Length: 284
Image (tube, rainbow, N blue to C red; front, top):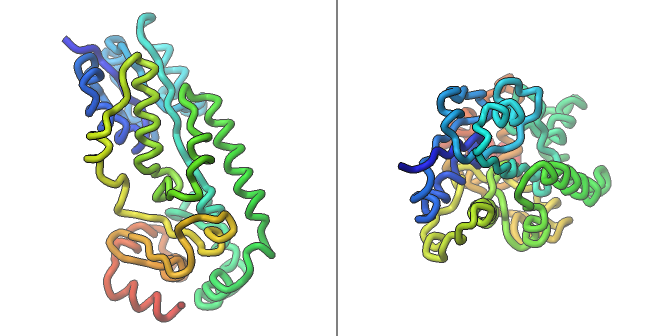
């Protein structure tokens, strides 16, 4: 009988489970039970008592019963615990904000509206003004890396060096917390290494599809230029729930959604079709 592995994580945990399931050695030893951490999904005590391997992303004490400390305290003394990273990289999107009440909040676009500009005016400023005159983009990037280093210290897996080494020539994430294949294979291989198992084979890498392809958070062309990115320059189109949008088109929809008084930006984006095309033409 296989041992129980409890995997406690966000969408990155779901991807990790899929990658680990491609390891014959891992599958032979463990049966994975996946629980979603950010929804506070409860893990039955009986399952915790049978757990041999606890794979989790760090959750502080403010998470109460599903905090990492509380869950580790309920494990058998023989259980092994491995903390894998919760990657959130703002380097491509320095104005992303976790302000509640709006999906993918953007502090730059919000500030333009708060100044009293209408959506068309705000879009012109957002796309034509010099960002480097208003923001210290290198400092914002350094701040992002510093924050990830702090988070990395709580993880059993180092990952920030991988981002620093490759983020300019390769788009490593499709949005702030949706890492692509390089980062997720890195995490999976590091988990396997900690368990004394070999890395995933090249044939698995070749067969793995693009991760989180349904939504690419558009990158401001001036951010791409400032950081020397090999992608995301002027005119680049991003897949936004089936619509190929430039940064300007996406920002126009963001501002239009705000003007409409809606907070369900993801649903607004998923509306797609002619409404998006009209908005992009009107505001660009």
